[in-house]
Image (tube, rainbow, N blue to C red; front, side, top):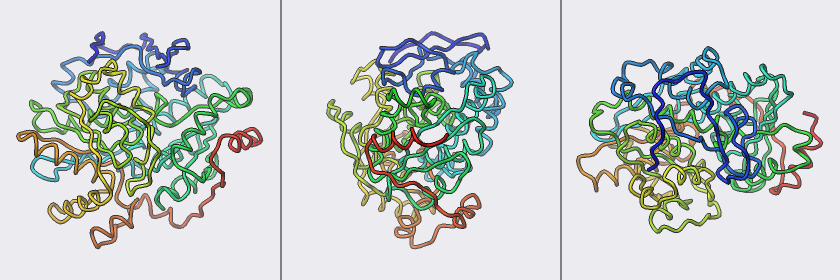
Length: 450
């Protein structure tokens, strides 16, 4: 694994630079990387160096508040793009809910990331990015920004909630028709104001391809200031590190770092965890837990990477055949296959196994998993059986209420609707139907009066 220069104490005078992984465009700061979303050469932005956290911070991590820890983690990546007072405010607003690490069995816990406003882990990235864009908009007075984002489930709702009413920002969300859950769909289609939902007759990969094409289009570039709120955007991707630091604060046996199983679709979440590990957070091993859309687990098994056509599953947010962030994962390991496989194991979990896992865990431990968490749980449980003496946790990325049909079928009980979701069922869905393919999206964007 790459060793990076140390950063002992963040200062507001440091300038973090980001370069395109395609290496055909100049380096930029955090501000420009956030606004652009994707580099002009179609590459993803990546930090020029990975700051190393002070070992004292790790040794005494339990003594820090979430807000202070979050600021110390994020400041080196933001550099002087945002002043200290505003960055502290942005971080505090981003993480203003709980991230409990809940024991499920003797050696498996669940990091519950669904206590935010849209009941999904993506609330953190969306809230951080929206507040950064709001700050930049106020500072720069550079005109309205159009956020264009594809979602396979939870990103849409989190982005809609995070950006709702943010002055100077219009949000357009593309989602695959019939391939997100009812709660997920209501979260992204009932906001109004500056949020527009495009219901695409296709897959998530179709939606993602349309978004990428839009960023590269010269005609759109002349009319709109486009950016992305998918995890390809550094302001969405980087704050996902914070989950892992908050989990380690709660991890009891800090001398024995955890094995972490991450439900993986577009690979932004696990990539953020790996980044945290490179910067100094102790983690014994990572598990990329996938459904049958398993291009990366297949690579980890065989050494051969090939994108696949996405196949619908009950863990729909992971139905990604060509994960964008995998290139960042490889960069963290200098594209060394053996280094990657030493740190990451990959699992492929079918829908039948996912359902059975949900049922077994509920019956044995009275813990209710959503389909994504169940994929991670199965993978972690299997891994630990082959590695006795180790323990770990899963990332439970969404509240089970988002998948009522699946959860009720395996448990025999209805899921209580949290207060955050109850009001959705009294709202009317509003979306614009659109065929897959860039031409129709381009025409719509060019003619919409933003």
